[in-house]
Image 1 (cartoon, protein in one colour):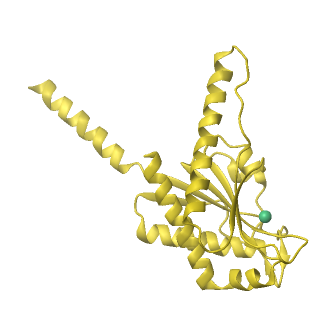
Image 2 (cartoon, rainbow, N blue to C red; image 1 turned 180 degrees about the horizontal axis):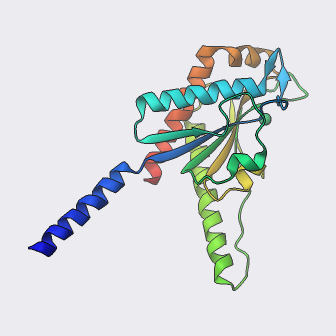
Image 3 (cartoon, helix red, strand yellow; image 1 turned 90 degrees about the horizontal axis):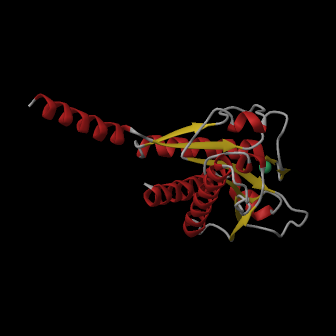
Length: 216
Ligand SMILES: [Zn+2]
């Protein structure tokens, strides 16, 4: 009887900890402080992505209690690329940026995930495990990129692979989103508005929810 009660308590504890485990989302508003990023049409990339990051955080904290959101910066200050990914292990990491081009005609969203991983032919078990982990990370980053592209109806969108520091040097699923081109006058005007930023925040949150459903 005693062991039965213990077993029951143990199972209850497992159920509770599974329910309590929140999905940890990390949002990284690019640039900040002296590094303004792209500056065009009186708008700084660093201010724009910080405003968007806060909108995503507010939207999630008011509607999604099972998701915990953390920002790599919540003020207009410089944070090194290394500090943005140090000592964290989120379920998903999203780095927010705004684009620029030499042409003022280019428009739309770009979502980046890691370059293809190839299994190295080493015999050491550590390197095989490392390879498999990095393939798993890339697969999940790709999955989120697909979910975002599927949700995105605000502008043309494209999915690309690239080795940006904050997505390359991580061990967790991580994606970099260029939300639009500040150099395109029409897109820059839209990006400045609260209404369009809210639409972007809602689209990203919907993609996070879709992704979370697929991996949990
Ligand atoms: Zn940037």
